[in-house]
Image 1 (tube, rainbow, N blue to C red):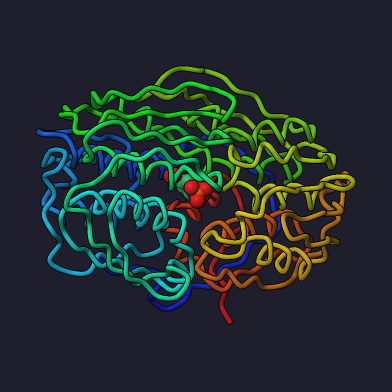
Image 2 (tube, rainbow, N blue to C red):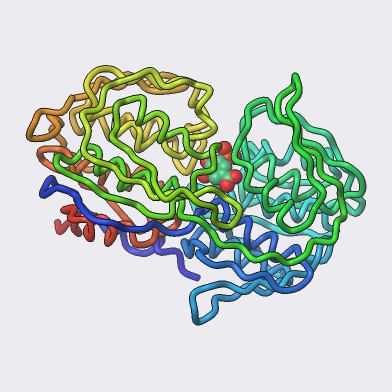
Length: 455
Ligand code: S3P
């Protein structure tokens, strides 16, 4: 598999043009897609996955599952068939596991390896090799795994899985669904009860899928927060999964419609798990005209069709406790804030500094270069919006944004360009394929003026 972000950069630009209009759907949820492949690989027998996100991040997880002995293949109808090896049945990978750009894939698969008597070596692209792995190394070491990594626990690193993994009880020091999931996946192959306590609830797709595949998992709230307990060494049965559309991807066209005058679009089949929908709550607080219709269930998750119409947004203070439910959506929220009337204050979002890029610094640079007044804080941004004149945003734009191997910085900058007088350019769109293959075509299909940029 060749990562397109290692190919020649493909600069693009977005310019203001006609209103966005129409209906579209976005690719499958990235978090659920990684987990669908992993749980399929852990079950004995055959799991069918429909709507899988075929982005590079998820394809890396599929490759890792194959390298560890499972079968994972795309069928002619576009669905995926996974044949699992059973809990405890993974084989040692014969080569380095290159997880590309994917923090989720890397940390979850490290959890699997940690409780198997095997050694696996992980690496990734320049972005992933910068990201901290200490947050999984520490608890997985308590379960008996050993790690040899670069300074700061960075990739490439070798995981020597425990011969006899110990179940642990662990309180998450940072709100992280990846760390929670790595521990629960490791706990599957440990005897006894593994428990994870999260002071702030994070996305619960792992818990939902554990149940879906027949594990014994219980969740309750007490004075410490949310407590998840898992009984180890279950036999997981195959269970089909229909992956809903990714709310984190839907966020980009929806915000584009909110800030481009005259727009009205609908994105169908968007996942509405309440631990993922903080951005929609925030946009509603800012006065966004968003409507949710056709609410239903898909693959055990709530979904809805979401319609966004151009809105005169106002700046607000975003509740910091909302951070885990909108952690991936801050870059695009900052774009909405740049087009709102007045100040938007974001605090409690320090985790953004260790995503695919330092998203606070990257978005501060991108917005400032395009004429947005802001202040960068250690844990957030204060953005003074340019407001919406009747003919559109008063945003100047005109600058090119360095995307730093970060798909969400690239998409946010391009959405900003649709509402800025002189547009906005990005140095590359290749890495958008990690999470949202077809993003450029989708925006073009809705009428957005987004094109390759020639020198
Ligand atoms: C994810 C958890 C979040 C999120 C990431 C996906 C997951 O990361 O940012 O895009 O699927 O568990 P953290 O666990 O680092 O908060």
